[in-house]
Amino acid sequence: MKQLRSLTEGSLAKGIFWFSLPLVFSNLLQVLFNMSDIAVVGRFAGADALGSVGSTSTLVALFTGFLMGVGSGVNVIVARFYGARQPDEVEKTVHTAALLCLGAGLAVMLVGLLFTRPLLLLLHTKEELIDGAVLYLRIYFLGMPALALYNFGNGVLSAVGDTRRPLCFLTIAGIVNVVLNLFFVIVCRLSVAGVAIASVISLYISAILVLLSLAGSVEEYALRAKKLRIDRDRARMLLSIGLPAGFQNAIFQIANLFIQTGVNSFDATTVSGNAAATNADSLVYDVMAAFYTACSSFMSQNLGAGKQERVKKSYLISLGYSFGIGVLLGVGLVLFGRVFLSLFTSEDAVADAGMARLTVMGFSYCVSAFMDCSIAASRGLGKSLVPTIIVVLGSCVFRVIWVYTIFAHFHTIQSLYLLYVFSWSITSLAEIAYFIRCYRKTFPKLPAAAR
Image (tube, rainbow, N blue to C red):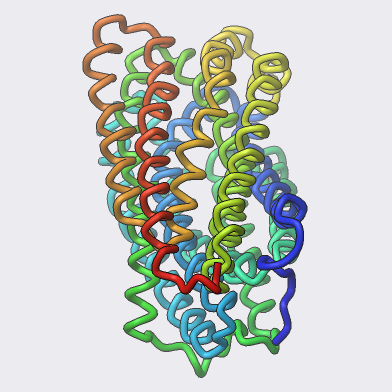
């Protein structure tokens, strides 16, 4: 049985780094290509177009985050069976996951198309921005089935140690996205509709490429149309990891809807500045997320192989990498924030409003590593429900309370942004404690020889 990259042997520090590096570039490219939507409309279609697209960021993150969470379940379960050398289980998992992810993508598309305007009204989206935001979202949601399938394929390939092909596929799709953004906005003058159409096309390109790659494989994780069926046991395993992860991401964004409502209580300049600066969140989070994927993949394969010490070290090394990249990128955004914001706006007032966010968030991003890496580690051990509950209570509920207490009292934009670091700190402590408990309960069950 061919092993693309051994996650159960060799130096963990080097292994996690080289495994994560293509994921870092993949996630970074994905963020940069998504930023091109905002950058193109901001530079070539004006502040209202920028505000319209920016006003959708929380809703986009809500639904795409759900699909990414479902995809993380694919990664964990495939990696465990692959590490345990159980090819029949890998095959069943892959074909079950393909159908589950497609179903999830279609469901998200329908929900998005039906409830776009009510959700934007719930957010108190500015009257002058809402029509453009509705148009952007309704087109963008047509790409959700493709995003779901790409996340499925990416989850399978990364689970078996292949993080390079997804990078290549994303690069191709992203270049197409940027070119089409410029064409539709500058040449065709389609404004927000143009960047949405470009995004949908690029999503389908990435999905087709990853599916063709799996279909052309001769390994046990190959995708075959005639083998597509739901295996109940594998479906339960996938859903037990993926659904809590997906709902966690979605609920997290629901809490952020309250934050967006708080932002919308300020003037349109602040809203646009926040929209521009929020792009930094995706930039930092998604680069750090590469090490969370590595954490789950390495822990799952080594759990399947019964290698206790490598399981623990996989968590600690991944945590160190993600914390370090959070510090590096965060401080960089504080120092060079105006250069970053110039990609999205040429208006000084909007850039000033964006710097208000970057100044607070730049020193806060690294704290989230303790929370998210611990969640990834627990999922690597097969535990997903409790980490989700902890996030809901420690971050989501806490944020809503903060909005209606601390922020309501001070009503400054800084008091709104500070809720992130406080919620991350509280949740991190609980997630670390839960992971330690799971780790101690998991390995005493293994034979001593397996340790």
